[in-house]
Image (cartoon, rainbow, N blue to C red; front, top):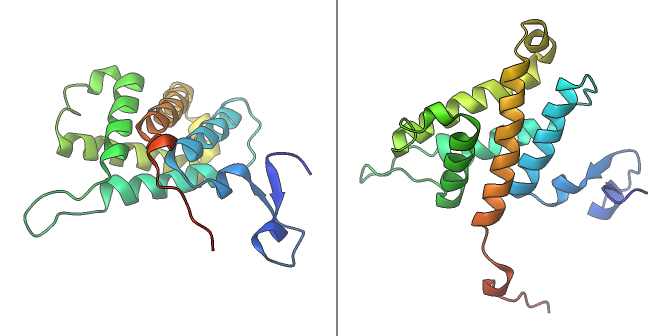
Length: 167
């Protein structure tokens, strides 16, 4: 068994036919973004293998930035670390967006555009290639990589985490 593929038996099922990758066991923004970047790269290079990480990344971005709505006090309820990481990733991959992502509303609007493009990749990857949108895919890959780095930088340091007590 390879290091990055673990049998589902590890999770307590009796099936040895389904395999889980490392990112499915580590469900954090930095890991999922990194694997999503690999999946986009595979599409660019013609080695398409599926888009499980891309789909999961879309879900993670939506849950932390887009579909949280507003509270009764009129404030957005978002994951601040995800917002910072997404802002840095957008600024790095799409420098022209810098003025529009200076507000929370602008950041959320641009994050929605990113999730729409990621979703388009998962639903019809061949049409993106046929339309000649390789540069869009390269920017998307860059965004996923920068999001991974930024999300990792925003994580709580191990030294500051509460120790887990097992009984």
